[in-house]
Length: 171
Image (tube, rainbow, N blue to C red):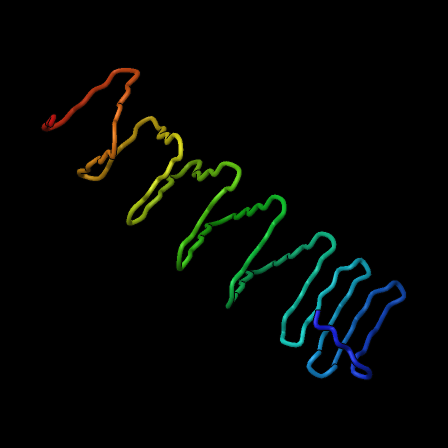
């Protein structure tokens, strides 16, 4: 807090139960401070910085639209779970790199009834152990492709194996 109140510029109102409203006009130390006796407060600093502290739950209820514009960076730290429940379409767009990561658990990307699409100029899947592709049918829809194997290759089929080709070469 940039507190530096000087008489006669600092004006404080304190209620009987301990709530405070402070208006500080001390030159170059101007502040507004609203303080609840629980420890919850909002303070406005001389350069326009706003500090909020909530000692219990914080509810933000908007009955219309809400838009937030941030000219700098945003950083959010959540100690426990974080849930976003979006009733309509959701888009996350970044002008640069984007990273989705679970440091200690699993990561699931799912479309329960729709199609899940991963696209890019190049898509790199890096499985440190096992990469499993699971589906009733796995389709390569690219009109022609090359599999480049940088080492040994084993193809194990535990049932029937069938190959159909217009031309089959073994080099």
